[in-house]
Length: 148
Image (cartoon, rainbow, N blue to C red; front, side, top):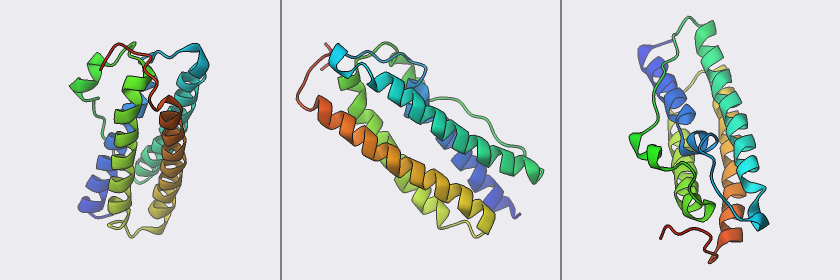
């Protein structure tokens, strides 16, 4: 594999494994009783995306390419125990941005087996973005946090 493709795949791996969704799955977002299921659903989505990034990391390892590690943006550190109505707009925006970046990156990859992995990631992102949009509509206009 050429170095540019290897670097691109590692960049995708780091970006996807350090998304806002991944961070929030361990940040204990707060919600009201009416929407109490949403944090658990976020955790499920984060787990599905974590599995997808793990498949990419495993693919790299099988080709003797060391997967890169990264870290979450420092901006995420203030998001623990924050209400869902405050978190959903940036979360939807982040997933939308990651989906667009993944679509652009996929166009640069010509290895068929890698494209299969990336296509699975894309489909998962699209599914999760639709679900997050639905959550945001449930909260539309309802203020449950003091952050505004």
